[in-house]
Image 1 (tube, rainbow, N blue to C red):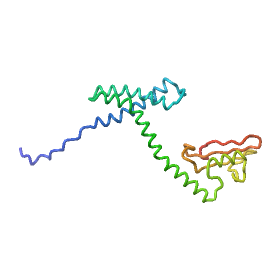
Image 2 (tube, rainbow, N blue to C red; image 1 turned 120 degrees about the vertical axis):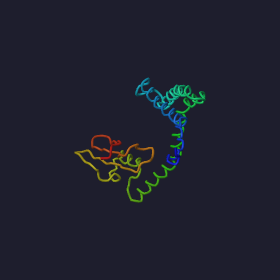
Image 3 (cartoon, one colour; image 1 turned 90 degrees about the vertical axis):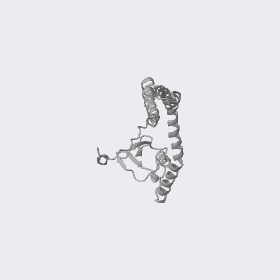
Image 4 (cartoon, rainbow, N blue to C red; image 1 turned 120 degrees about the horizontal axis):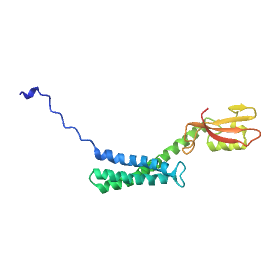
Length: 189
């Protein structure tokens, strides 16, 4: 047979990266199992520090998953140790990333407040808005966004600090003649 008529030989394919896939699967499965176990055994309102309990449940789940993976692969002790420690390592990485991003987030919040003041707005922080609401200081609050009978409402839409308001919305100040002023987070009206 003439070999020139045959297609060129294909390069051998790369084997599936089992070690890397399992190294990522173990912490993901452990954290998911820890969530389920905590919810099932402790209920929706666990006593004490819920995050710490979740990590403990995830560590135990990771230990079990590490034992199973260790039985299927070589380096059993390494997989068992990785199974137990990986939820804690994942939580530490998230914490480190959050801490590393904090100065940038604070810088951006400072810039937004400076821009707000440059625009000439009277209230450029949530704390200032809440204090003006508590004092019923209409000179700072300005004209109400809504007025129904004796109830007046103002909205603060930002700027916010990184630790404030975890959703895109506004803070409502509601003042009535007969009740104490209140503030609450609301969806942007």
